[in-house]
Length: 433
Image (cartoon, helix red, strand yellow):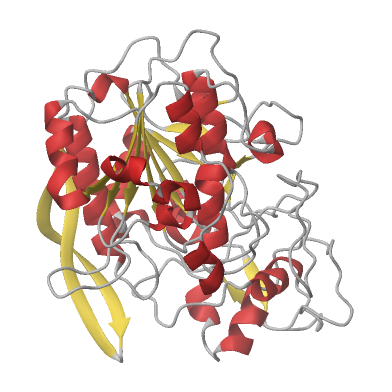
Protein backbone atom coordinates (compact mmCIF):
# COMPACT_ATOMS: atom_id res chain seq x y z
CA UNK A 1 0.00 0.00 0.00
CA UNK A 2 1.62 3.28 -1.09
CA UNK A 3 1.31 6.50 0.89
CA UNK A 4 1.70 9.88 -0.79
CA UNK A 5 -0.59 12.37 0.92
CA UNK A 6 -1.11 13.62 4.45
CA UNK A 7 -4.22 13.70 6.58
CA UNK A 8 -5.49 17.05 7.85
CA UNK A 9 -6.73 15.56 11.13
CA UNK A 10 -4.69 15.97 14.34
CA UNK A 11 -2.19 13.23 14.96
CA UNK A 12 -3.14 10.48 17.40
CA UNK A 13 0.56 9.99 18.17
CA UNK A 14 1.64 11.14 21.63
CA UNK A 15 4.96 9.25 21.88
CA UNK A 16 7.59 8.91 19.15
CA UNK A 17 10.26 6.26 19.71
CA UNK A 18 13.47 6.30 17.65
CA UNK A 19 16.22 3.69 17.35
CA UNK A 20 19.21 4.60 15.12
CA UNK A 21 21.33 1.62 14.11
CA UNK A 22 24.73 1.69 12.40
CA UNK A 23 26.26 1.56 8.94
CA UNK A 24 24.01 -0.43 6.60
CA UNK A 25 22.45 0.64 3.30
CA UNK A 26 18.86 0.05 2.26
CA UNK A 27 19.74 -2.43 -0.48
CA UNK A 28 22.08 -4.31 1.87
CA UNK A 29 19.43 -4.79 4.60
CA UNK A 30 16.07 -4.46 2.82
CA UNK A 31 16.72 -4.45 -0.93
CA UNK A 32 15.63 -8.05 -1.35
CA UNK A 33 12.35 -7.32 0.43
CA UNK A 34 11.07 -6.44 -3.02
CA UNK A 35 10.62 -10.21 -3.40
CA UNK A 36 7.91 -10.17 -0.74
CA UNK A 37 6.37 -6.82 -1.71
CA UNK A 38 6.94 -5.52 -5.27
CA UNK A 39 5.87 -2.04 -4.10
CA UNK A 40 9.22 -1.69 -2.27
CA UNK A 41 11.94 0.04 -4.28
CA UNK A 42 14.51 -2.67 -3.72
CA UNK A 43 16.66 -4.78 -6.03
CA UNK A 44 15.83 -7.16 -8.87
CA UNK A 45 19.16 -8.98 -9.16
CA UNK A 46 20.22 -7.10 -12.28
CA UNK A 47 22.11 -4.40 -10.34
CA UNK A 48 25.88 -4.33 -10.78
CA UNK A 49 29.02 -2.19 -10.56
CA UNK A 50 32.19 -2.38 -12.66
CA UNK A 51 35.57 -3.19 -11.14
CA UNK A 52 36.88 -0.15 -13.03
CA UNK A 53 34.60 2.75 -13.90
CA UNK A 54 37.10 4.04 -16.48
CA UNK A 55 37.15 0.77 -18.46
CA UNK A 56 34.03 0.27 -20.62
CA UNK A 57 34.89 -3.44 -20.86
CA UNK A 58 35.39 -3.89 -17.13
CA UNK A 59 34.07 -6.97 -15.34
CA UNK A 60 30.80 -6.29 -13.55
CA UNK A 61 30.06 -7.48 -10.01
CA UNK A 62 26.36 -8.28 -9.59
CA UNK A 63 24.43 -7.65 -6.39
CA UNK A 64 23.75 -10.93 -4.54
CA UNK A 65 21.47 -12.17 -1.76
CA UNK A 66 24.00 -14.09 0.37
CA UNK A 67 24.98 -11.44 2.94
CA UNK A 68 26.11 -12.77 6.30
CA UNK A 69 28.76 -11.86 8.79
CA UNK A 70 30.65 -8.73 7.63
CA UNK A 71 34.33 -8.19 8.40
CA UNK A 72 36.20 -5.98 7.59
CA UNK A 73 34.16 -2.81 7.74
CA UNK A 74 33.84 -1.13 4.28
CA UNK A 75 35.16 2.41 3.91
CA UNK A 76 32.55 5.13 4.45
CA UNK A 77 34.63 8.29 4.70
CA UNK A 78 33.64 11.37 2.72
CA UNK A 79 36.27 10.55 0.08
CA UNK A 80 35.13 6.92 -0.20
CA UNK A 81 31.47 7.89 -0.53
CA UNK A 82 32.39 10.42 -3.20
CA UNK A 83 33.87 7.59 -5.26
CA UNK A 84 31.04 5.18 -4.48
CA UNK A 85 28.31 7.51 -5.74
CA UNK A 86 30.17 9.19 -8.62
CA UNK A 87 32.59 6.53 -9.84
CA UNK A 88 35.42 9.08 -9.59
CA UNK A 89 38.20 9.14 -7.02
CA UNK A 90 38.40 12.24 -4.84
CA UNK A 91 41.17 14.57 -6.03
CA UNK A 92 42.21 17.06 -3.36
CA UNK A 93 44.10 19.13 -5.93
CA UNK A 94 41.20 19.27 -8.37
CA UNK A 95 37.97 18.73 -6.41
CA UNK A 96 34.62 18.56 -8.15
CA UNK A 97 32.01 19.61 -5.57
CA UNK A 98 29.08 18.58 -7.80
CA UNK A 99 29.91 15.23 -9.41
CA UNK A 100 27.44 13.40 -11.58
CA UNK A 101 25.75 10.80 -9.40
CA UNK A 102 25.94 7.36 -11.03
CA UNK A 103 26.07 4.95 -8.02
CA UNK A 104 28.69 2.94 -9.94
CA UNK A 105 31.84 3.24 -7.80
CA UNK A 106 31.13 0.86 -4.92
CA UNK A 107 33.12 -2.06 -6.33
CA UNK A 108 36.01 0.09 -7.48
CA UNK A 109 36.30 1.70 -4.04
CA UNK A 110 35.94 -1.62 -2.18
CA UNK A 111 38.65 -3.32 -4.24
CA UNK A 112 40.97 -0.37 -3.68
CA UNK A 113 40.42 -0.77 0.07
CA UNK A 114 40.68 -4.56 0.34
CA UNK A 115 40.89 -6.97 -2.62
CA UNK A 116 37.77 -9.15 -2.60
CA UNK A 117 35.76 -6.74 -0.44
CA UNK A 118 33.42 -6.00 -3.34
CA UNK A 119 31.77 -9.40 -2.75
CA UNK A 120 30.72 -8.09 0.67
CA UNK A 121 29.72 -4.62 -0.49
CA UNK A 122 27.62 -5.99 -3.37
CA UNK A 123 25.53 -8.27 -1.19
CA UNK A 124 22.25 -8.09 0.70
CA UNK A 125 20.26 -10.10 3.21
CA UNK A 126 17.38 -12.29 2.19
CA UNK A 127 14.25 -11.35 4.16
CA UNK A 128 14.48 -14.66 6.03
CA UNK A 129 17.94 -13.69 7.33
CA UNK A 130 16.57 -10.60 9.13
CA UNK A 131 13.27 -12.12 10.31
CA UNK A 132 12.26 -9.37 12.74
CA UNK A 133 12.48 -6.82 9.95
CA UNK A 134 10.56 -9.17 7.69
CA UNK A 135 7.70 -9.32 10.17
CA UNK A 136 7.66 -5.57 10.83
CA UNK A 137 7.78 -4.63 7.13
CA UNK A 138 4.94 -7.04 6.47
CA UNK A 139 2.84 -5.94 9.43
CA UNK A 140 3.55 -2.20 9.38
CA UNK A 141 5.54 0.15 7.10
CA UNK A 142 8.83 0.61 5.31
CA UNK A 143 10.17 3.84 3.79
CA UNK A 144 12.21 3.16 0.67
CA UNK A 145 13.49 6.73 0.19
CA UNK A 146 15.13 7.68 3.49
CA UNK A 147 18.64 9.06 3.03
CA UNK A 148 21.54 9.84 5.32
CA UNK A 149 21.73 13.60 5.84
CA UNK A 150 25.18 13.98 4.30
CA UNK A 151 27.70 11.76 2.47
CA UNK A 152 29.88 11.18 5.51
CA UNK A 153 30.47 8.85 8.44
CA UNK A 154 28.56 8.08 11.64
CA UNK A 155 28.74 11.04 14.01
CA UNK A 156 27.99 13.84 11.51
CA UNK A 157 24.87 11.95 10.47
CA UNK A 158 23.86 11.22 14.05
CA UNK A 159 24.14 14.94 14.82
CA UNK A 160 21.50 15.61 12.16
CA UNK A 161 19.08 13.18 13.80
CA UNK A 162 18.33 15.52 16.69
CA UNK A 163 19.51 18.93 15.47
CA UNK A 164 19.12 18.95 11.64
CA UNK A 165 22.76 19.97 11.25
CA UNK A 166 26.24 18.68 12.02
CA UNK A 167 27.46 22.26 12.60
CA UNK A 168 30.04 21.81 9.86
CA UNK A 169 31.32 18.37 10.93
CA UNK A 170 32.12 15.93 8.11
CA UNK A 171 33.93 13.19 10.03
CA UNK A 172 34.22 11.56 13.44
CA UNK A 173 36.47 14.27 14.87
CA UNK A 174 37.40 13.12 18.38
CA UNK A 175 38.33 16.58 19.64
CA UNK A 176 35.08 18.10 18.42
CA UNK A 177 33.07 15.29 20.01
CA UNK A 178 34.83 15.78 23.34
CA UNK A 179 34.20 19.52 23.27
CA UNK A 180 30.58 18.98 22.26
CA UNK A 181 28.52 20.63 19.53
CA UNK A 182 26.73 23.91 20.33
CA UNK A 183 23.61 23.79 18.13
CA UNK A 184 20.06 23.74 19.43
CA UNK A 185 18.43 20.31 19.48
CA UNK A 186 14.92 18.94 19.21
CA UNK A 187 15.16 18.05 22.90
CA UNK A 188 15.25 21.73 23.88
CA UNK A 189 12.42 22.54 21.46
CA UNK A 190 10.25 19.89 23.05
CA UNK A 191 11.08 21.14 26.55
CA UNK A 192 10.30 24.75 25.60
CA UNK A 193 6.88 23.64 24.39
CA UNK A 194 6.04 21.62 27.49
CA UNK A 195 6.82 18.14 26.16
CA UNK A 196 9.01 15.45 27.68
CA UNK A 197 11.90 13.37 26.37
CA UNK A 198 13.98 10.45 27.54
CA UNK A 199 17.23 8.90 26.33
CA UNK A 200 17.61 5.18 27.09
CA UNK A 201 21.23 4.15 26.59
CA UNK A 202 23.03 0.81 26.76
CA UNK A 203 26.76 1.53 26.58
CA UNK A 204 26.92 5.32 26.57
CA UNK A 205 24.63 8.10 25.30
CA UNK A 206 26.10 9.56 22.11
CA UNK A 207 23.51 12.32 22.49
CA UNK A 208 25.95 13.85 24.99
CA UNK A 209 27.93 15.03 21.97
CA UNK A 210 25.38 17.85 21.99
CA UNK A 211 26.95 20.23 24.50
CA UNK A 212 23.71 21.59 25.91
CA UNK A 213 22.49 18.13 26.94
CA UNK A 214 25.43 18.00 29.39
CA UNK A 215 23.70 20.58 31.60
CA UNK A 216 22.85 19.24 35.03
CA UNK A 217 19.15 19.94 34.56
CA UNK A 218 18.96 17.13 31.99
CA UNK A 219 20.47 14.41 34.16
CA UNK A 220 17.04 12.87 34.87
CA UNK A 221 16.33 12.59 31.14
CA UNK A 222 18.99 9.88 30.77
CA UNK A 223 18.07 6.31 31.69
CA UNK A 224 20.02 3.07 31.62
CA UNK A 225 18.09 1.00 29.09
CA UNK A 226 18.23 -2.36 30.89
CA UNK A 227 17.06 -0.84 34.16
CA UNK A 228 14.34 1.50 32.95
CA UNK A 229 12.94 0.97 29.45
CA UNK A 230 10.71 -2.06 29.97
CA UNK A 231 9.57 -0.74 33.34
CA UNK A 232 8.58 2.63 31.85
CA UNK A 233 6.73 0.83 29.06
CA UNK A 234 4.86 -1.37 31.50
CA UNK A 235 3.95 1.54 33.78
CA UNK A 236 2.85 3.77 30.89
CA UNK A 237 5.49 6.36 31.73
CA UNK A 238 7.29 6.78 28.42
CA UNK A 239 7.91 10.46 27.59
CA UNK A 240 6.73 12.15 24.40
CA UNK A 241 10.04 11.54 22.64
CA UNK A 242 12.01 8.37 23.33
CA UNK A 243 15.53 7.83 22.01
CA UNK A 244 17.02 4.34 22.36
CA UNK A 245 20.79 4.09 21.99
CA UNK A 246 22.04 0.58 21.19
CA UNK A 247 25.08 -1.15 22.64
CA UNK A 248 27.92 0.16 20.49
CA UNK A 249 30.61 -2.16 21.86
CA UNK A 250 30.98 -5.77 22.94
CA UNK A 251 31.17 -6.12 26.70
CA UNK A 252 31.91 -9.14 28.88
CA UNK A 253 28.25 -9.95 29.48
CA UNK A 254 26.68 -8.92 26.17
CA UNK A 255 27.47 -8.46 22.49
CA UNK A 256 27.11 -5.18 20.63
CA UNK A 257 23.66 -4.85 19.05
CA UNK A 258 24.03 -1.71 16.89
CA UNK A 259 24.60 -3.66 13.61
CA UNK A 260 27.90 -1.87 12.95
CA UNK A 261 30.21 -4.26 11.09
CA UNK A 262 31.73 -6.46 12.37
CA UNK A 263 28.87 -6.82 14.85
CA UNK A 264 26.38 -9.65 14.33
CA UNK A 265 23.06 -8.45 12.89
CA UNK A 266 21.21 -11.15 14.80
CA UNK A 267 21.96 -9.14 17.96
CA UNK A 268 20.33 -6.11 16.34
CA UNK A 269 17.31 -8.23 15.47
CA UNK A 270 17.03 -9.28 19.10
CA UNK A 271 17.12 -5.63 20.20
CA UNK A 272 14.36 -4.56 17.79
CA UNK A 273 12.30 -7.57 18.87
CA UNK A 274 12.72 -6.60 22.52
CA UNK A 275 11.78 -2.95 21.93
CA UNK A 276 8.73 -3.88 19.87
CA UNK A 277 7.42 -6.33 22.46
CA UNK A 278 7.85 -3.81 25.28
CA UNK A 279 6.03 -1.11 23.32
CA UNK A 280 3.30 -3.50 22.18
CA UNK A 281 2.51 -4.51 25.75
CA UNK A 282 2.51 -0.92 27.06
CA UNK A 283 -0.76 0.84 27.94
CA UNK A 284 0.60 3.65 25.72
CA UNK A 285 0.68 1.41 22.61
CA UNK A 286 -2.23 3.13 20.87
CA UNK A 287 -0.37 6.47 21.01
CA UNK A 288 3.04 5.25 19.80
CA UNK A 289 4.98 5.61 16.55
CA UNK A 290 8.25 3.60 16.53
CA UNK A 291 10.94 4.39 13.95
CA UNK A 292 14.02 2.26 13.17
CA UNK A 293 16.63 3.84 10.89
CA UNK A 294 20.37 3.59 10.23
CA UNK A 295 22.77 6.51 10.54
CA UNK A 296 24.54 5.96 7.20
CA UNK A 297 25.15 3.28 4.59
CA UNK A 298 28.53 2.05 5.86
CA UNK A 299 30.03 1.67 2.37
CA UNK A 300 27.46 -0.93 1.24
CA UNK A 301 25.92 -0.68 -2.22
CA UNK A 302 22.65 1.08 -2.87
CA UNK A 303 21.25 1.66 -6.34
CA UNK A 304 19.16 4.82 -5.76
CA UNK A 305 21.00 8.05 -6.69
CA UNK A 306 21.78 10.34 -3.78
CA UNK A 307 19.81 13.63 -4.01
CA UNK A 308 21.60 16.88 -4.80
CA UNK A 309 20.53 20.52 -4.61
CA UNK A 310 19.69 20.14 -0.93
CA UNK A 311 19.53 23.26 1.29
CA UNK A 312 22.42 23.81 3.66
CA UNK A 313 21.03 23.82 7.20
CA UNK A 314 22.95 26.84 8.41
CA UNK A 315 25.29 27.99 5.60
CA UNK A 316 28.33 26.59 7.39
CA UNK A 317 30.95 25.27 4.96
CA UNK A 318 32.97 22.15 5.78
CA UNK A 319 36.71 22.28 6.48
CA UNK A 320 39.54 22.23 3.98
CA UNK A 321 40.24 20.58 1.62
CA UNK A 322 36.60 19.58 1.06
CA UNK A 323 34.77 22.89 1.50
CA UNK A 324 31.57 20.89 1.45
CA UNK A 325 28.43 23.04 1.36
CA UNK A 326 26.12 20.37 2.82
CA UNK A 327 24.06 20.46 -0.37
CA UNK A 328 24.03 16.71 -1.09
CA UNK A 329 22.48 13.87 0.89
CA UNK A 330 24.17 10.60 1.72
CA UNK A 331 23.11 7.14 0.55
CA UNK A 332 19.75 5.56 1.17
CA UNK A 333 19.36 3.72 4.48
CA UNK A 334 16.72 1.38 5.95
CA UNK A 335 13.70 2.96 7.63
CA UNK A 336 10.92 0.95 9.28
CA UNK A 337 7.87 2.51 10.95
CA UNK A 338 5.63 0.77 13.46
CA UNK A 339 2.32 1.88 14.94
CA UNK A 340 -1.23 0.53 15.38
CA UNK A 341 -2.24 3.47 13.20
CA UNK A 342 -0.44 1.98 10.17
CA UNK A 343 -2.00 -0.45 7.70
CA UNK A 344 -0.04 -3.67 7.01
CA UNK A 345 2.41 -3.61 4.09
CA UNK A 346 2.48 0.18 3.87
CA UNK A 347 5.29 1.56 1.70
CA UNK A 348 6.32 5.19 2.07
CA UNK A 349 8.05 6.65 -0.99
CA UNK A 350 8.85 10.34 -1.47
CA UNK A 351 7.22 13.00 0.71
CA UNK A 352 4.65 15.31 -0.85
CA UNK A 353 6.34 18.44 0.53
CA UNK A 354 6.87 20.93 1.98
CA UNK A 355 9.16 21.67 -1.01
CA UNK A 356 8.95 19.99 -4.43
CA UNK A 357 12.50 18.67 -3.84
CA UNK A 358 11.92 17.49 -0.26
CA UNK A 359 13.16 14.05 0.77
CA UNK A 360 13.03 11.88 3.85
CA UNK A 361 16.33 12.10 5.73
CA UNK A 362 17.43 12.32 9.35
CA UNK A 363 16.17 15.90 9.67
CA UNK A 364 12.71 14.46 8.99
CA UNK A 365 12.63 13.42 12.64
CA UNK A 366 12.77 17.03 13.85
CA UNK A 367 10.32 18.04 11.11
CA UNK A 368 7.87 15.34 12.17
CA UNK A 369 8.12 16.12 15.87
CA UNK A 370 7.48 19.78 15.10
CA UNK A 371 4.35 18.85 13.17
CA UNK A 372 2.98 16.26 15.59
CA UNK A 373 3.54 18.39 18.69
CA UNK A 374 2.95 21.76 17.02
CA UNK A 375 6.34 23.12 18.08
CA UNK A 376 6.99 26.82 17.56
CA UNK A 377 9.90 26.74 15.12
CA UNK A 378 12.20 24.63 12.99
CA UNK A 379 15.78 24.05 14.08
CA UNK A 380 17.46 24.83 10.75
CA UNK A 381 16.70 25.30 7.07
CA UNK A 382 17.18 21.55 6.63
CA UNK A 383 14.33 20.30 8.83
CA UNK A 384 12.16 23.07 7.36
CA UNK A 385 12.81 21.41 3.98
CA UNK A 386 12.73 17.73 4.97
CA UNK A 387 9.64 15.59 4.53
CA UNK A 388 7.53 14.78 7.58
CA UNK A 389 6.82 11.06 7.99
CA UNK A 390 3.63 11.50 10.01
CA UNK A 391 1.87 10.71 6.71
CA UNK A 392 2.62 7.06 7.45
CA UNK A 393 -0.28 7.23 9.91
CA UNK A 394 -2.91 6.09 7.43
CA UNK A 395 -5.81 4.81 9.55
CA UNK A 396 -8.70 6.56 11.29
CA UNK A 397 -8.70 4.06 14.17
CA UNK A 398 -5.91 1.99 15.77
CA UNK A 399 -5.60 -1.65 14.80
CA UNK A 400 -6.52 -4.37 17.26
CA UNK A 401 -4.72 -7.13 15.35
CA UNK A 402 -1.11 -5.97 15.85
CA UNK A 403 1.20 -8.89 16.61
CA UNK A 404 1.99 -9.57 20.25
CA UNK A 405 5.23 -11.41 20.90
CA UNK A 406 8.01 -12.59 18.60
CA UNK A 407 8.57 -16.25 19.39
CA UNK A 408 12.20 -17.36 19.43
CA UNK A 409 12.49 -20.60 17.46
CA UNK A 410 15.57 -22.65 16.60
CA UNK A 411 14.60 -23.17 12.97
CA UNK A 412 16.64 -20.57 11.05
CA UNK A 413 20.38 -20.79 10.59
CA UNK A 414 22.29 -17.60 9.85
CA UNK A 415 25.82 -18.21 8.63
CA UNK A 416 28.56 -15.68 9.28
CA UNK A 417 32.22 -15.74 8.34
CA UNK A 418 34.66 -14.66 11.06
CA UNK A 419 38.41 -15.33 10.85
CA UNK A 420 37.86 -18.14 8.32
CA UNK A 421 35.45 -19.93 10.69
CA UNK A 422 31.81 -20.41 9.74
CA UNK A 423 29.63 -19.66 12.75
CA UNK A 424 26.06 -20.91 12.74
CA UNK A 425 23.36 -19.06 14.61
CA UNK A 426 20.07 -20.90 15.08
CA UNK A 427 18.06 -17.72 15.45
CA UNK A 428 14.55 -17.27 14.16
CA UNK A 429 11.87 -14.89 15.16
CA UNK A 430 8.26 -15.29 14.18
CA UNK A 431 5.29 -13.38 15.46
CA UNK A 432 2.84 -14.97 17.84
CA UNK A 433 -0.56 -13.37 17.43
